Figure 1: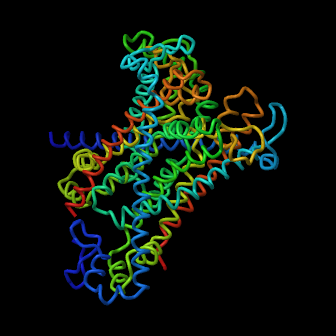
Figure 2 (figure 1 turned 90 degrees about the vertical axis):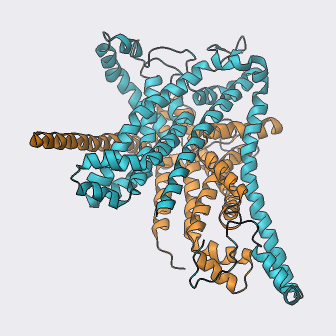
Figure 3 (figure 1 turned 45 degrees about the vertical axis):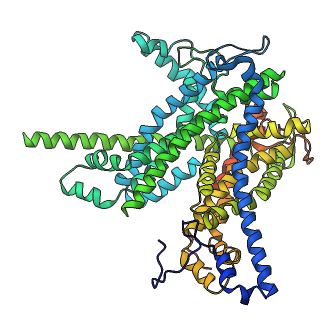
Length: 351
Length: 281
């Protein structure tokens, strides 16, 4: 219930129940004889209705936009769906000459780069959030927090060209040879870090993605941590817990669904990210066991090949890739929203 | 015994908190290096020609004028079309629909659109406009950017309107205003700064978007203001030039990247200042 200053049970037009008469109806039914005589009132009543319809139309437009995306992707991908069916998902071949297309390599690349990105950015992001909420000297807290948020807004193409010009050569010269040499004799790792150091590849793309989504993860996690009621933490400190024990046993469990939701939002970003990845992934439709080898992702494939695609089947296959990407990110983002919504509702219930 | 346990807990605490401080140094370090490189490489490429000449052939001097103009034109169009739609839709969610099922659905869909991969938006607009018109065009580029502006504006508008206390609305209704009047004269006015923030954030967002422009506006190496033809855009120019083998183009790409970053930072900082300012009107 919306609180009223003096407790009058007035009909409020923004109450949840839809059976409630709207403000407009009230005016008309109760005072019709008095008000409707005036042309001016009728005019403003009309203007009111028009405005409401206008806002409704715009809200519907957003829904139509969404439906339009789904429809147009389905429509554009139809030739490929008809030609390849489910096998599209499990075929590694990508041959424009013979018109044989399969999504396995881009799907693998997308999942692998995102996995690398999450493995690095989630622990580091949580570390930053803990630092910002507990350890950081107060005067530095706001500046660092703001810096992190501003960095989260930097366009991905910046990360892309930095990765291409700076990170990839660096990795090729120093880091990759080191990884290859170090893990040469370790059973599984030797195949993960094998082959010549190209500099570009799945590993480099994952690293760039990690750097890119790090500020995002850190900012969201910090917000969630800050929402943990101070009483809970104080109670734990009162029992003699150390700072770490409070974080691990009180803050994290309380903030769990928020952190998971934020992490999934970040995952949604990583999966669909185009520009940061396209520069450094290598664009090779071959699945290699080595993380250092060039590969491709769904978005990189579309970005690189779409304008050059000749023939309806080639274009349709690229659009079907886009459709798969949209579907996967949709599921991830929907799950993220569910988690965040749950957190919001719980926070609302407790306060 | 107890002493040893206490010591162990303190050591664990110290180690893990040390790690979290190290994580901060690690994360901010990377970002610092990126910004440092960008400033260093970018500033060495900035000169007057950057703003007065169009894309040069490799090996000659030139600038990014056509790309800057293209980005501004398509961005402006997208904001002009997207802002009213976004504000009205956000108004519906906050004022009329608030608890209706339709509003829940639109809110959900809008949040998906907000973080959906932008390359998919590009595919959508391509499918909608390019085969129909028969060619790539700045119109299609602007449409793709509009589809990105709308969800950002919807979200911030709704959030800002929800912050306005209901007592304000009730006071206006008590004076006999119609609902439309209340919204236009009271709630919008009270939420003004926040709504402008939303538009600024949307501009910041589209100024760096590359993926949706790749196969809508396509890019153009020449000066063009024809909205019916392919048009250059700053991010597209960066993408093209960075992947080329020419040293001069790399320099221009860095300069362009610096321009975009500065624009985004200025916009987000302005938005932040606006947002944090207490309401006076």
